Image: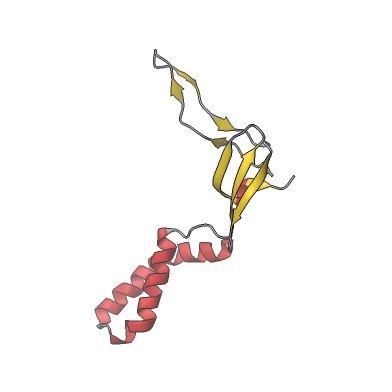
Length: 116
């Protein structure tokens, strides 16, 4: 696999005078070997909350007072853009890659890597 973008591995390091002396990153184009592929990226908090609230509305919405049901529908509506974006992205994988320089990147979104 090859990195498609630069990835910073640490914050800038300051010398004794306080001046920045450098930082550590992996450059785009760095090549490595895939060690593991995980099936899915973890869902965001907003996506999990959308799923929880829509399930609540479907199961108990008919028994809720009107004001509570309306408030729940508004909360779901506010989370809907995140849900739509999640559905459009589809299922993505994360990978563990050992780069030729010895660094290991674990849990990386597959979008930041490309096959050789």
